[in-house]
Length: 263
Image (cartoon, rainbow, N blue to C red; front, side, top):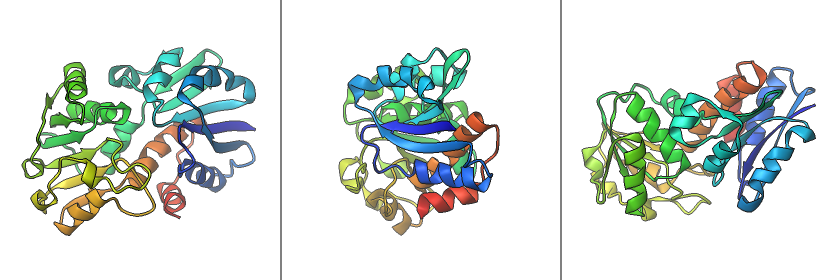
């Protein structure tokens, strides 16, 4: 049995096991592969990852708060992971552990059209925000970054490009992506962000990388204004399908993964 897992802290809320196991079942791989969620405290991550190959693991997803540490722990990394400075996908092979990042292409795949030339606002400056900013810059968007701790936003744009903002006006942007922890755990999100819900426009796209059992207050406000929205579960499905293909060499059904994630 080839084992897969998602590593996080906390991680009990993760929809990844249901989603990946449904995809494995759909492709008749459930007898060869399995996927589970493992809660790993920050101080134990490096040692735990090092022992995973010996426990039968072929790969792992990495979520909050481990994405940057996972990259450091890897023996090698893709160009995307290195440039982003964070990893959400690890693969264990004969030559060691390879880090990759499917958050960036997963975000782009979830958008109806390229963000090229559009004004984009990234909320947050952690591992997910790094992937979002890298993806948007690579597509030619005009990206700005807000973070509660302003110095982190400055550090992020210095590393990857874009400009920091301290008091963003939601109405000034064509695309808004919440890549912060606001809303994590089901608290809603909008109240922790510098967003006036009255500023949303019907021609905007608003993305929330955080997912829960119901739409975040950020997305509810955007939908009320007629904006197009993309929730965290769709991002989870898109990046998860890319990770799945890296590990198994097979393309998973997006519909099957989506149904399991939303079930």
